[in-house]
Length: 268
Image 1 (spheres, rainbow, N blue to C red):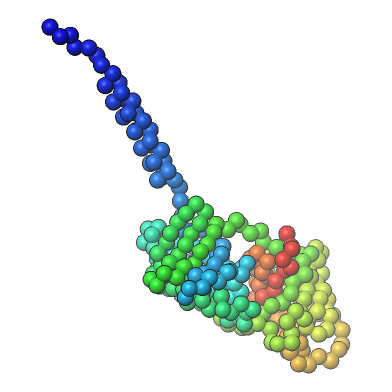
Image 2: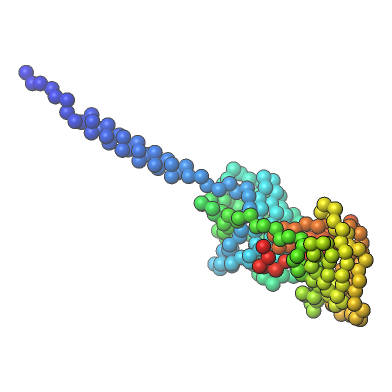
């Protein structure tokens, strides 16, 4: 009579199964690696459209909320309504945007054209790519929180003027002529575009009120004179609501008029 022995097949099979299970576990772990949620702040790196790649200005970004996105085309700011289909697609309905004349209008125009309608979402570690129906893309990377510039001890250069819902860049010949610095004691000094000025500011929360301006008496005309007249009226109009986002300061009066100023790039 033949004696049956306990051969190694079950043990070998068990080993194979154990290795397969381990391999499967690793595959599942890789497949389940945490990918970024589209909701959050993203720095735009580049656009691809029409067979070309356009590299983004430093300021280009998207800040996604659950139902709204705030962003910057590189110079002009904008808002839009968004509706997510899980994490695979988003539908964008453009809202308001500023209308400044900017240095890289080619990028701004292309960005605005692509960032509308239904966009599919490709996610990777610390990356997000939005794709249009024709295959154009908006490539982004996770943006670390950019610290806001301090209000005081910074030279703010006026970049544009606000009038209600519209924003316009300074007229040709006046760019960079209006600058001011608010000291720690809330004294302010600078130039209005032509004449130098000084004043004292009072601060209540996010509201700044400029006291009477002391200025030099040069006769100013042309674009710099126009800017000076508008800034003089603005500073004398009462409390201004202030807001700082990154290196950008906004001062807005109750009637909707205001300014946007920028801090130097090396400010911390």
